[in-house]
Amino acid sequence: MNRTVTSREQLLAAAKEIAYGQGLSQVNIRAVASKCGVAVGSIYNYFPTKADLIAAVIEDFWRQAAHMESCVPGPGEPFPAYVGRLYGELRRNLSAFQSGWLSQIAALGAEERQKGRALEEKCFEHIKRGLLHALEGCPSAPPLLADADGRSAFVDFVFRNLLLLLRRGDSDCAYFQQILEALL
Image (tube, rainbow, N blue to C red):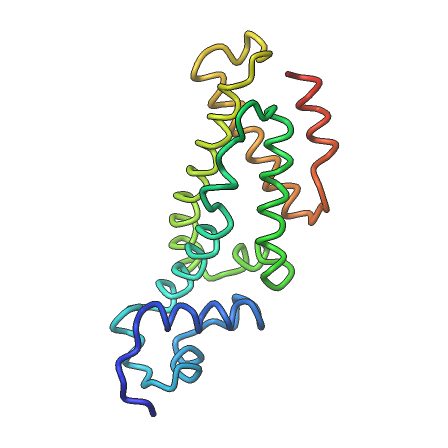
């Protein structure tokens, strides 16, 4: 075994490599220790449980998938176009993982899923803020979206539909964009 100190980042990189190559279900403390050439106990210094390790992989994935540039609407970018661009970015990032990433998350054990969902939610809020910002810049928003509650509910609706399309594996969200164009 390699007795050199391994950083949290190195351990997370190894866990991500396993998740990317073999699927999220194959990520565990022993596999990461083996990949890094360290004792199993070393992993526990950074990730007290398998659930913490998997949650860190999920958080890192969503952080990359929802990087700042993709969540910021361009100047004058119409809301439907922004939604399409955002969908494309998320889809590209999801395709880097083994197919079925979202369904793999859903199939995790209760503790892993709970921790992963909490971290996912932070990233989802970031994406929703970008959607809200884009919607607020939409000059043709109907009266239903005139107040903060209406805009927030609409953003939640749009976001849930984007996730649904991603889970289904749709190559684009062109039809959904057409619906948004008709509404706005």
